[in-house]
View (cartoon, rainbow, N blue to C red):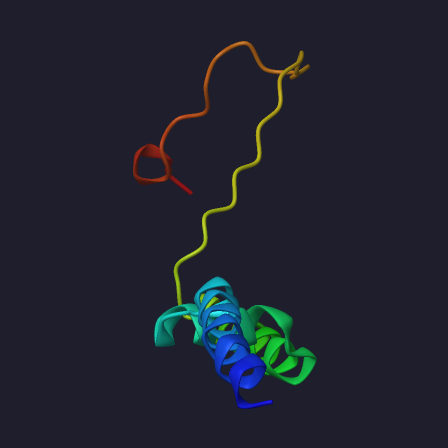
Length: 91
């Protein structure tokens, strides 16, 4: 009765060792897997990214803006000569 138990013990040890090797991860790998799979962690990460974008939007109000307006076309005027400067005119 002891003999089959002793012969099965190395087999069980070997099976548990190979199974442990298959699922063995380093700590950074396990942390990365948890970060990718856990929904609450994902919600926290997305909340942080949204807050960062809101800060950038708020800081954008302090940056300078440039407005450009352009057009082309004909312009009709009644005078053919340009008007004299204001200093040259006499009342």
